[in-house]
Image 1 (cartoon, helix red, strand yellow):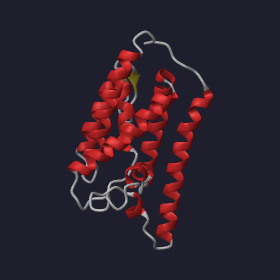
Image 2: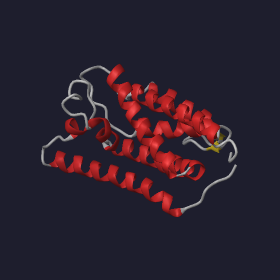
Image 3: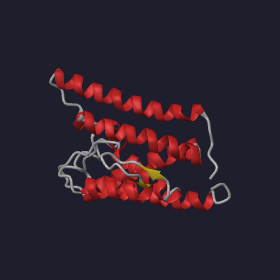
Length: 194
């Protein structure tokens, strides 16, 4: 498998991570001042027609630090790996289209009064693409001490998170499916390179 190598290609990933941390900081400053900005950034079927930007802003919005940290670490590792394989443009397309498809699944399948936030759908799109492009790549998943194929890790991650109450399985599913489709398309295009 041929990998591209360019330190500059990590800059957009780092910018996305920094933006997520800045929004998290703004949310916490807002809470300190008794202002809740999550309803203006989160995705909800009730408010979407009046606030269509939330299909993008929800991808940068996290309330809990562990949620933010888990998504940003996974974004960094999946994103940097995918960028080396497919290039920066493909990474950005998969990330943002995956996040938007994730949002569409939320709008179509979630309860009307729910508010969805987090980059998980976009991150699952990266994982889905990598599961197709590099299925046998070995990864470690905390707390499991043995390496496993990347595709297994992505599917297990999806199934485990689906069982957690309050987690948007709809968003994860939309992101994962869009990533799998992107991986299939890229696998055909990059057949000579892979």
